[in-house]
Image (cartoon, rainbow over all chains, first blue to last red; front, side):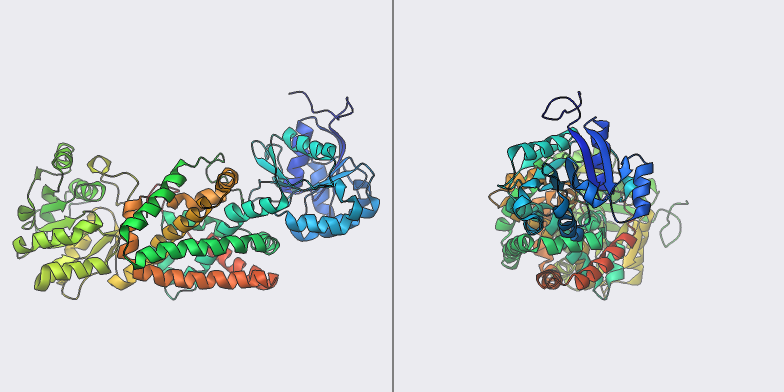
Length: 305
Length: 305
């Protein structure tokens, strides 16, 4: 595949890329773009010198830079922990190059968009919100690899203020990583991700937490089998990461859990009434839909999404 | 390993075994005992002649018998669908040999015990309730195999009326199949199984059902990843089997779901209050416990338990 080129013709798609937070997400983005011949120079920015040095040694970045230098790159990927997103955008704002495009990788979008509006003001058009649905339990620069985003979905939630060309650049960058890119509104993104990712994690934590709180928890865990194992696997996730997501996306999540409680109540009502016919009918529809669902992801690949 | 012998010394542990319902569960029990040299003659009883004939051809049973003949065997395993348990016990009752021991394989025990008391009256001491925690999505005699119960747990919930020697015979039979046998009360069995098997299935069905009911269900399913996949795998189970279990064990299950709702509410309250510290602490305790849990079962072996 020929290297993606800058819209102006000739040269790589992104002559100067800055990655703020050179961990699994940021490091893999840089590695993938480099492998695709889509970047010129890669700058690495972060808080921990040791980590940045490691990223440089691993060839993920060409040189370590300051946030001020990063703000003048062609594309800046903000791939920092959720709580650091707004401070990072605030720090970039005063130094932002006139043509610099900033994008992110956060698991939630409405809150990031709100933070970007506060941080960038009338320059918010230079921020294209994004979310690559990928990851693994590994973290840090040593975990980064160029193939992370192959066949993965990246969601962009473009703002009304984004020029089409800016959105297109971010789209092409992710496509150069091998990802499938889709657009939707931030609200829709947050609802969908609440539904199929965040709430299952919350439910798994709640269920596991309840079992642990029982007086015969040890006996229960001893007799738990493969159904329990698969249902609760995601309750072994990072407490910090999930705290951040649960707080950031609570509105969308609480809307979903309210609806789930209602569905559970309906099923329980058929149980109380001994209505085997209604119960079987409902279970059959759900079971058939689940069995028909095709998941592209490989079996238990360890992604935390 | 020498063949398990009858307590009277010499000869196999179970000279005459009758299996009522020669499917995966009953057929595998017969196959395992035969492989262990623990049975003399194996009688097969059931409703479908074709199925019984297949069981006989496969060598799972020596001959097809009537329920009346089965009632005079040394040990009778009732391995029929849940709804057929009481009718089977009622049909056995009038013909029950004075020393015949009857046992079952049902996923719930309190209801089976109640049915046995109704069916057998003052001969209920001849019924030893049991539950082998094993299975697969396969069914029928062709799915039966001798190794199904190796290293699996079988729970017995002996009645006060059971002579110790009767319980011991059933225990040794399951041990001859390679299983690990544990005793507990029927109430405890039903609570524990509700907790770690039945309720996760109900929650997975409820969650999946809610997602399917949303207007953008197709988009959600399209973006669902490995977390969703593992969390909802068990929502693909048999609607008939789970209807039966949900109805049979509803009391224990509803007690668990009430507690789970409370745990969920506590987590949601920390989210509403933005109490990141309390939330992280709770998630960390749950996550650590999940990560420490060791499951003997192989990965996604397809057991429906």
